[in-house]
Amino acid sequence: MMSVIEQLNEIGNKPIETKNLKNYRRIVAEHLDVETAILFDKRLSYEIYKGLDDAVEYYEENSLKVKVFGKWHPVPRKMATYCDEGITYTFSGLTMPTRNWFPLLSQLRDIVTKLTGFDYNFVLVNRYENGNQHIGEHRDGEKEIDPSSPIVSLSFGQHRDFVFRHSNSKARPDLTPIKMELPNGSILVMNPPTNQFWLHSLPIRKKALHPRINLTFRKIFRSE
DNA sequence: TGGGGCGCAGCGCG
DNA sequence: GCGCGCTGCGCCCC
Image (tube, rainbow, N blue to C red):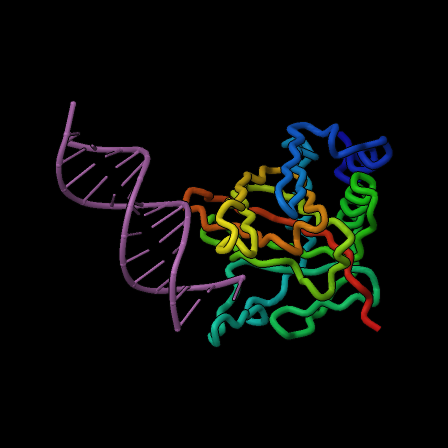
């Protein structure tokens, strides 16, 4: 019985390409280019899920407040960040403490690097306890993310719906929202310039009863 | 079989 | 990028 680390090493040591993965799908629209596929089988995904659940240290709940239309709200999910030295992370105007990669996380990062051909120096971990926990539509940190790099999302646990909406969809009703499901063990690659033009969200789904852990790998500009 | 009720998704708004 | 209130729709139930 191989450990998770060994199984991931084996995956990382073989040549891998996103387009050769199971259920590979590429979606292209105006200013949007995203790819989805199954990266890990069910068994390994569950082991990664457990490994993450054991190791990830989330921010204190009361430190995660977001100001929307003048009112402060606790965010409806758990969050954590891991990154290289010298990277800072700002959430809702506050510079948050970050942690250094641990082995499982850096292995996953290395696989994502190998798949996409880009380096990532930062990962945001979001944990959604059930379908009542969610994230509203947004772009990922516009100022600090290198816009020439993809943003890569890995999903573990409860499958959830995921929606893209063009930021100018009022003026362009022809650009209808793009909806997809993110299953356990899946990868989603948001290629440039998707994040510049499209908002994305993880909507409430009352029927989703179980937790989902999501990793979003990014390349952040180093602060001087 | 169909009408009513309920729960959920989607949207506008602050 | 939050919750709330409203609406419309699909599904379940008898």
